[in-house]
Structure formats: structure tokens, C-alpha cells
Image (cartoon, rainbow, N blue to C red; front, top):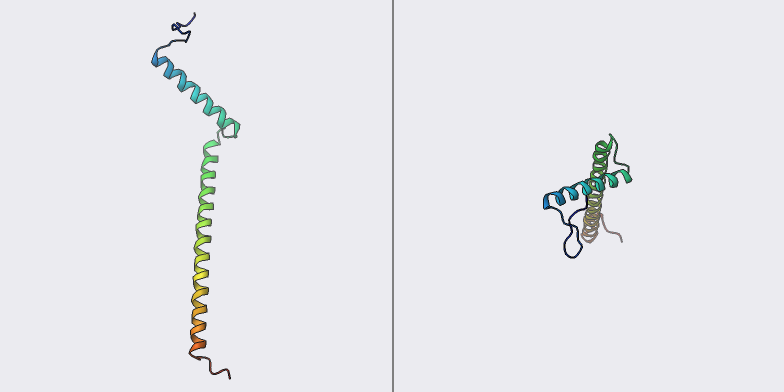
Length: 96
């Protein structure tokens, strides 16, 4: 059976049939893409959960590292200021 064609030579099909064709093509493409990266077996959902947990752990570690660095810098600056004030007020006795 030859599909009907328009005057310009294009194949014509009903919208519903075209939508179904697109949906099947998209599904097959998605399955092929998942298979290409190794996420097509029974363990695929578990692998995805593990990957998401790993990424969340990396994000948490990065956030914690930044917070720790800020705390260390703030503490260092405050200690330097306190040491400067202590020296200026001669809290530790006269040096000479």
C-alpha cells in the first residue's frame, strides 16, 4: 500500500497516526540512549538512585568545604585582631 502524497510529493498521514509514530520513535530513541550508557537492565533504577545519591553527597561535601573555609578564615582574622589588640594594650606585659 502506497501512502497518499500531496501535490509537492510529501507523504500525508492523519495527525493521530503521526503523533503515534513520533511517540514510538521517541521511546525507541530513549531506550537506545539508555542502553548506550549502560542503563537498560533491571538494575537501571537502582543505578540512577545511586548516582543521584552520589551527586548529592558531592554537593554536600562541596557546601561543607566552603563553609569550613569561611569559618577558618573568619576565625583566623578574629584571632589576628585579638592578638593585635592584646599587643596594643600591652596585656602580656611590656616588651622592653
